Image 1: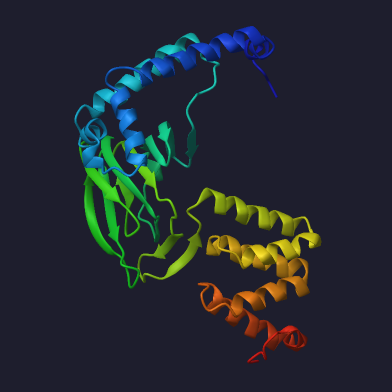
Image 2: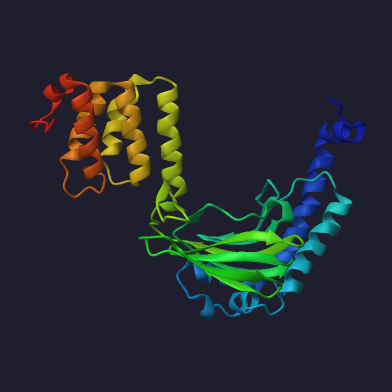
Length: 317
């Protein structure tokens, strides 16, 4: 792999690295404390504490379109000047880019995130499924033109579709029952978004648009997502000693998706420990997973009759 000599020299010079990063971080702080930006960021904290967006004067006005273009241009100019002087410094903002769609998190306070989104024309297409996430999102189109769709879903039947004309100034609001998709674009789309997480969010539902059937559930809580990945990792590692712990977790009070994954891995690692957890879950009338746990237990007992002897109560199979 070729490494540019300038980059190689920069990587070996700790003083130069610190100086470059310091210039970029100083530019970020200067931008955040400027007269136009500081009230907006302060309102992000108020929104995270439970205030309504309309009661957050500076943030509410920004998302209504007042000075939004200048706000975004101010951030771009402030950071571009810093990177022009320190082009090898790391970006001090959380960011992502994949398949023609990108996100730049300008600020985060509690469960509130202020972000810039960009969608390139090649990434826009009519979807077959749409995700409904249990969080509040307010969006304002800053630049770009195209077509979009809003989806309203009650939880039963196909979602209702509203066609949108995407253009600068368009405002969108989404929550657990409302989502949106970008169908086609004439030019790249830039969106300013404020999102607020809920304290105990319900799982994200991915719904088939044509039928309204839920094709996938996912935890909306980062902690639960980490727990689900941890359970899968323990299973991949073959850690049979973790099976009792996973079975206990499955019978706890965490998100259903993470608990079900823990139960699956416990069954795979140690049948006895996992099946004991499955029995406890199936016999708990207050647990939302009890019906599917009973269905799984009945299926397993039918396929493997010897498991019926491990049930505390007679297995219907």
